[in-house]
Length: 182
Image 1: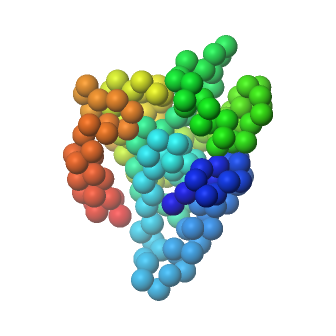
Image 2: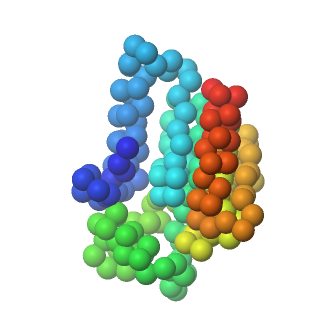
């Protein structure tokens, strides 16, 4: 699913707009005759993992969430400079529709779930990433796993953002973990 601010969905992403989009999807899925609404899960990769984290906070219908490489507090709350590749910074400008660096920082700040929010997540969370992420702070993944009450951490050694070098392994893990938790 496209998230706000990407591909054909050109409305800028904000906390409210992205959560509405995902709530609408959950509403649709819950009403479908072939879906067991008591077993809804969500998998997010990279910025989609930021959305999955925020939805785990915002919507108790989610019963399991997999978060792979989410930019959270350490990555989206820069002090001074962003400390991430310019390509990624430019993509973030487009995603949130920012026109200036100050506007970008303000827009990204609203997309950061607080530690207190993460501590309130009721569903199991599987936090995945490469241990040497060069795009975002791996510590965001570690923090998420430390703060979410029912969480598991899986860092793949010698791998980068979203552990793409271990794609087959984490896809298998995702499937098994969702079967166990849903």
